[in-house]
Length: 170
Image 1: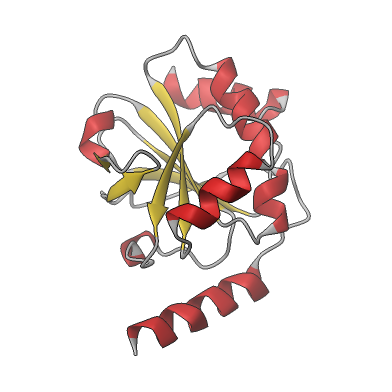
Image 2: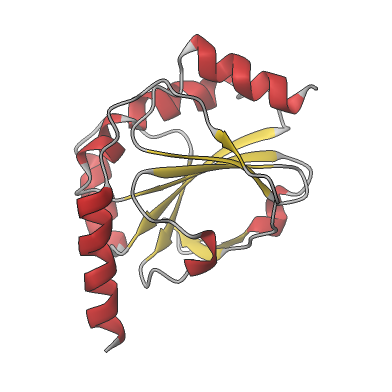
């Protein structure tokens, strides 16, 4: 029954995906709530949100079958590279509903990904309230969601870089 509900959730996410507005900035979350994760990375190591304490984290939910998700990978790479010398900012992409082999085979077919990829094969992070993919969250240093946005974005645009800097250094 759980697999059937996961398949249904993936179908809903597929239908709801695909935003055309690539440069609209993120929506402020009025009542920031703490979230968590404890997921495997591609090296079979469990990564916890607590490991990013004292950093802002851009968490992107995606899947290999989602064209907008795939389209934004280069801009996420560029954003991560732009902030690579800043220990206060991390990019984390959480693949939903796919196993490690599928994700690894996909990654072999594209340019290098320079940010952390985690696997949520069972779609266990329901408290994040992801209703479409890609969905991206900006977490503050306390691990609370402070901004969110759905759809494909140009993460390396001057507007997004400026936005992230303004949040981190206000």
